[in-house]
Image 1 (cartoon, helix red, strand yellow):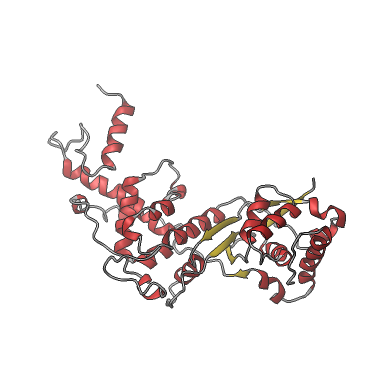
Image 2 (cartoon, rainbow over the protein chains, first blue to last red):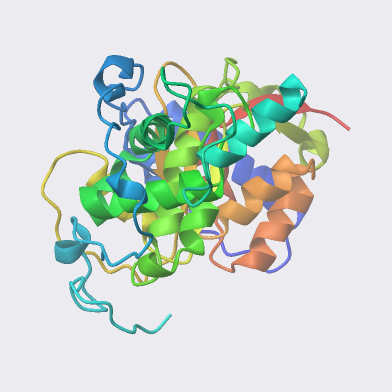
Length: 97
Length: 255
C-alpha cells in the first residue's frame, strides 16, 4: 500500500495495479474506502419543485429596486463554523488570504 | 416602427437594469406608461431567477444565511442574466461571481463550496454510463499496463480547493448542526454518479493531478509520473483502487 517510488518503473506500476486489484479481493469495504474517503450523495430537496405559483406574487414589491446599497454580511452557519480565522464576524473585517 | 426583435431586446434590457425606464409601449389600460406594473414584472423575473439559484446552491445559502444569499443572488441575476433558455444551466458562473463578490470576501472558501454544488448538479444530469468493473484491469497483460489509458466516467467532476471546501460543503449540505472547521487544509473532491446517486469523495494527495492527467488522455504510466511529480505522497495503488471503487473509470483504452 505505502510504496514510495522515486522513479516509476514498470515493475512498480505492475505491482501497484496488482495491489489495487487485491483490495477488491477482500470481501468488505474497509480496504477500498481507505484510499478515497466517500462522503455521500446528498439529494437536493425540492429540486424539481415547480414554485411558479409561489413566486408569482412574491415579487410584487418594487422596493427592492429602490437602492443598490449592499450592507449585508454573511450571517448563516459561517458564524459558528470557522475557527482559524476566528468566527464569522457580523461586521466586515480584514482577513489574511 | 421598431421591429419585434428590437422591441424584445429593449424589453429584456430594461428588465435587468433597475435604473432603466420602462420600455416604450408598456402602458396600462389608460394607455399611459405603467412603470409600476413593469416594476412588478421585473421583480418577478429577478425573483424567479433568484429562486433558481437558491435551489441550486443550498449549502452556500445555509453558510451565508437567507438575507445575504438573496441579496447576492439578486446581484448575480442582474449582472449575469441567463444566456440559455434552459433554467437547469443557469448558475454555471455563480461560483466565479462569488469569487469576485466583495461582500463575500470574508469567506474565501465560499466560491469553492459553490463550485462543488455546481459540479454536483452537472454530475447529476450527466450522461448515464456503466462504470469499469473493478476486475477489468486483471485482463490486461502486464507488459501492456504502462501504455493503457482510460476514458473516464461522463459524470466525473473534480473540484479542487485551497481550503477545506469539501468539509464545509458536507457539513452544510444537510440540516445537521455545524462544528468548527479548520478551513486552511486544502481539499480536492471527486464527484461521480456511477448509478442513481451522486457520490462525493475526498481525493488523496496527488490524486487530482492523476485524474486530470488521465482525463487528458495520458497513459497510466505518464499519469502516474505526473501525479508523483505533483505530490511525492502520491500512492498509485491506492489511487487506482479508489477510482475503481468510485466508479470513476469507464473504459480501458489500449494504445
